[in-house]
Every structure is written in structure tokens, then in C-alpha cells.
Length: 194
Image 1 (spheres, rainbow, N blue to C red):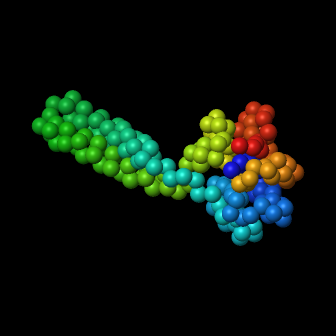
Image 2: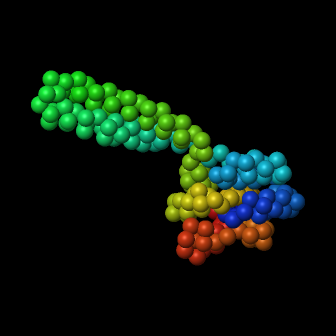
Image 3: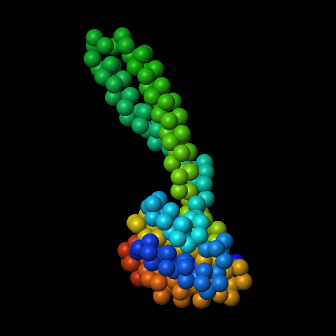
């Protein structure tokens, strides 16, 4: 299956491209789009009947990253207080309690960080992995995702036979697909075949 991916500056452009692709015989289940604006995403889905791409779940990486950030946050908050307890002579009797505070800060920070990492990772999913699974090179997948985070709309057309990918690419260009480097800052056509 060959996939064509394009970025559009405006949701209306993406909606026009999706409608044009459907009029040319591309089936809804082979089309997708993604953007960070939930309201605009809902509008495009209702107008075109195409389901938005959910990305892949972020998985354990988001949980681990969240836990590590939580642990660092717990240390940043509790270690200075413990050090103050050690430095000030009158409060030295509380240093063991301060050490327990550091321990609880690390445990609590790690647990909350992991929880928020899991929750944050499931919101939009991992579009880079989704694009990589479709055959998009890693560097381009990162640029597509950066463009999407920058406010662009990503449209995906999958061609099971591979015979109509050029047609999909041409339709996307006609409806305003931007150059990839223009969307994230530098010259290659934003819509590409993969």
C-alpha cells in the first residue's frame, strides 16, 4: 500500500482536498487527516465523513519520560529543603524527617509523572510512528509532525494498489499542499509519496 501525505495551512484546504479525493473515487477508509485543533478536526470529520487519524499510542516511552521528569521535580523541590535542615544548626534534629521528605518527593513525583505521562501520551498518539509504519522516512515524519504541531493539517491518502498515488498527490497539490520545509522552516514539497 502506497501512502501520500501532505500538509495544509488551513483546515478548509484540507477539507477541500479530502472531498476532491472522495469525488475521484478514493474510499473514506483509505483517507485520514490530523490536526491539533479539536474543533476544526470535528468540523472536517463531519463535513467529509473521513475519520481523523489517532496516531499510535505513545506507549511506555511517555510513561518512563513522565516518571523521570517527576523524579527530577521531586528532587528539585525536596533536596533544597533537606539541605536547609542540615545547614541550620537548630533544625538539624529534623534532618531524618527531611530525608524521608526527599524519599516521598521522589516516589510521589515519579508516580505522578508516570501517570501524567501515560495520560498525555494517549491524547494525540505518536504520529511519527504512524508515519514511519506507512513508509515515511524518519526525518520527514518528524517534519510532518512538527508542521502539524505548528498548526498545519496533515492529510493522508492510502492507495492499496499504488496505481493512483500520483493522482492523489496532484489533487493535494491543487488544493494547497505546502512544501514540507516551508511548513517547518526550509524547501522540499510538503506533499510526498511513500
